[in-house]
Image (cartoon, rainbow, N blue to C red; front, side, top):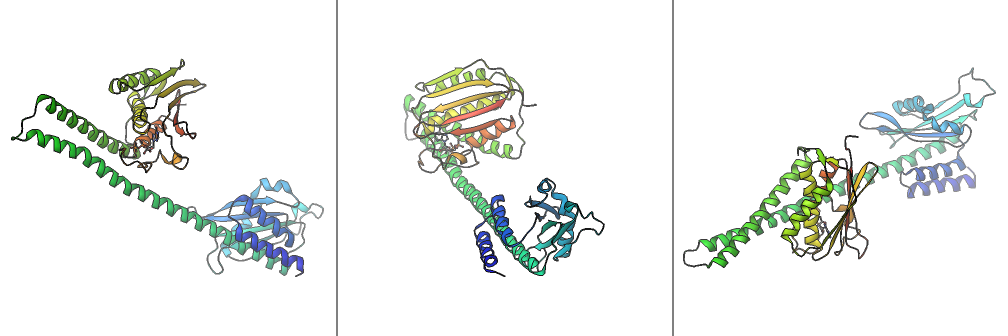
Amino acid sequence: MDDLAFESLYELIQTSAQAGNSRSAIEKFLTVLRKVFVFDNVAVYLEDERTASLEIMYARAIGRARNAEADAAWGETFASQVFAKGLILTQDPPPDAPLEDRLQRPYMLGLPMGAEGATPRGALVFVRFGGPVYENEHIRVAKIAADLLSVLFERAEWRGTKSELNELKRQMQLQEDFVSTISHELRTPLGFIKGYSTSLLRKDTQWDDATRDEFLVIIDEEADRLSLLIENVLESARLQSKTLPLRFQPLRLDAVLRDVVTRIRSRYKDLEVTMQANSIPPIHGDGVRIAQIFENLFTNALKYAPGSPITITLDSSGDAVTIVFKDHGPGITPESLPLIFERFYRVTGDKTVTGSGLGLYICKQIIQAHRGKIWAESPPGEGVAFFIELPINPAN
Ligand code: ADP
């Protein structure tokens, strides 16, 4: 082997050491390979473990017959043989193939992929139209390429497993956090209810009417908080198991929103809400559930952006209605933003703000059941804007 070949082989090893299994990484690898090994087409087939059949993973026509790229089936039967036997195979064109048409005279070389001695994981197939035949030296280089590619894929798979594992760990952490949040969330109102009712029941103390009313209001509010929390937990479980029934009917979103705003205003007199509703067509949806979403957004704004004015706009375009619900509070960091709709996710930090991490998850599930979308944006210093897009007719 000459110096150039050695250098290219070295470059090949370097490339595979750095690369992932992205298309561009494989492309780079094959470009380097072409310096030491001539081929027109190449295809990588890997075993799909679920179906136990070979799936085309990558195909490329580099030399002659570029149009062959579109039809990756050219190597499939041959690849299956290589894969089944676990051997390096070559296949010459049929003896009666017309000499003047190179494309009808493919010389194929197939190499099993995977660790030496183990069951193959796939096959790497090269084709040269009209030759030349594969010399032993060519086959040795191709074998190195197949081995390097195998390592490359295996490493990517390992990385995939690792990230799945990390995701699983994250989910477990979320569940754990949820259990501790929820036990705290259950205990706090229960503690108030128990404390104030015990006080009221004390025989040795006389409470004046005002104090008694004050205690009863606290008990009442804390009982509401408790039942809302339990309702949320149950609802999120039902949503996850897809057993929450939705009652679809023609719905005027502006009317639903106005109702919610009236209810919220009666409870929070100082809250500044501006609503701008352009004339929008009715949608098909569950009014109770949609109202619940708005209530949730209000509750969050009151909790996380206290004192901030809220603006709501309703608009329609084509076959969807868009609602933007915006506050001017502290906003959400870019790291947390993609996670806030996850079940149990809470932004850690201010522990005095109570919550279960279920509210936005429930919102998203309801919106998805309406075939809509919900997302949030939070440009620095501008609070949070929640966007909801609902199809006018979800059946379409
Ligand atoms: P919870 O309020 O019970 O924690 P949610 O699912 O409703 O759960 O919200 C998830 C997280 O998103 C909250 O913990 C909070 O940190 C963040 N968040 C939601 N709404 C806002 C908002 N308007 N401004 C800032 N942060 C918000």
